Image (cartoon, rainbow, N blue to C red; front, side, top):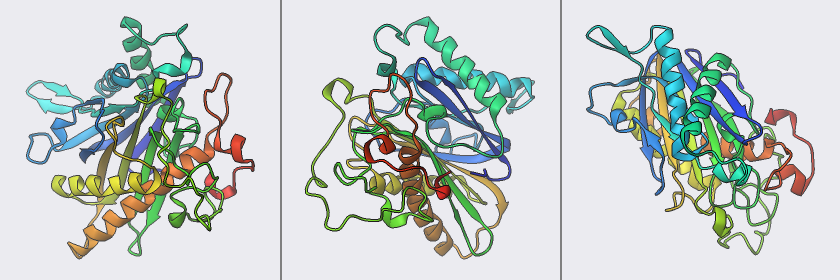
Length: 337
């Protein structure tokens, strides 16, 4: 999928450890905000993004595997930005502004390959650097970047993306690493909870189930040993010019997309976080109606991106969860790429 002008997205992964990093690089410092609704977040520099604080723009956003160890990926991104002369000017110094969030995928590789101790920082720092070097104007989806080792309650997770376009030419894009404690489908059926918002059969075109499966309302979580290995992380970007406060409101609204696509969402065991970016390339007219329309699009587009992530996930040796296609069959449709 194409990325908004002014932004680049890069992925890096360690196939053996089944973990990875995704970086969102802004060509120039960009208005940013964040809202955390999960009860188990692993975050860095999110307080800086509160409305009213000194620095209103970010140079990059990082999503990573590795739980709190994965936050070291931001060190690599900061180093890359500093080498390229980027950062907030403080006297004679430039300090790159790189908020980050991480999901838990430490259990993927088994006890024989623990990502702990001093080695973890080096692993994720190098992945952060590699993601910067790989950043471009298009992004793949599926088992890439921060979604490499992601899982849901009963399926392999992944990295997803979706876009909404507006009549005046404006755009909104949603990117997400899907690793929740709950399900993204109606029970054990192949039907995605986000089906009402699907476009062009982008995640199979199955629509909503009729009738609803008997287990649609049942609480299905990851097994107890992995129940705390959860979190859905997203970045929602638009080319409309927003203030920091408006970007914060957009991040709050975008969380509805998680609730529309995942059940349950925003639990004590999830670290759900949504970042928003505004490149400011075009004015947003008719406030506040325009902000309401943008908020609705953020929710529906993020819901689509979540379903696309799981639909596009690919099997790999040693996986602990089946992919959607392993379980339900079928090939990826053209609209899902």
